[in-house]
View 1 (cartoon, rainbow, N blue to C red):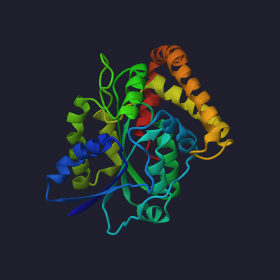
View 2: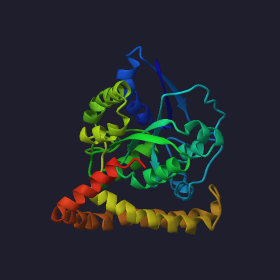
View 3: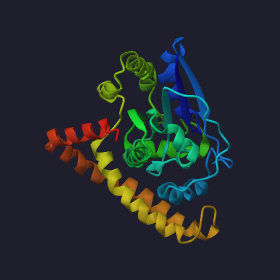
Length: 302
């Protein structure tokens, strides 16, 4: 029997829903045992969030700060580890990054086969870049990456995700679609579990990511990826600016966080539509090159 461990952190439950859909074919087989480890911070983040609490975690997300996690045990030898995570401010969520920094987790993951699963709004490349560096440093055998995102246009998803985070409801705005991964993508999830079964049976782990990509298992957009790479550098400047006024929860930094909030919303609603249009034109004009670039990003495991 093959043993699989799922490590995840979720607030709304969507990420767990994605994982459950993917591993469903394996759970229905006597050949696989699946264990779950939910990451639990000693002092968890709120859900729904208040506006202040939401923006207050930006600097620590960008800088890769850690928080205390409840004690955990990683006993047993697993044939596959699934790491399911969210993206916060273009980076790995603080609880997920915190568990990865634990010495026991680093030792546990060494030489293990690992599949990553992301449930996101629409940007993930910066976060995955940080995770790939971690994998290389700690000798993790990353064999697959699945990315599922909100399919709605960027400006629409900004409105719906902010309402979702502050109300806990997927459809809080009249006349706008619900936030989150589409029902169509949810219905496709078991097909990726079957690909994992095939990899176990045929020991075809080296080609698994190609199969994920061929079956549209990695959501990626050229204009969003290009925007994100530039925004990652800007977020770093903002995080340094805010941290000069203290650590998370310090009232002294509220003013700078409010400036950042206005800047971010201005960037999203007034600047990004024009930059996105330019990037879309570039994508079309240089299609052979841009398509190859996106494919390279989607296939990257190391």
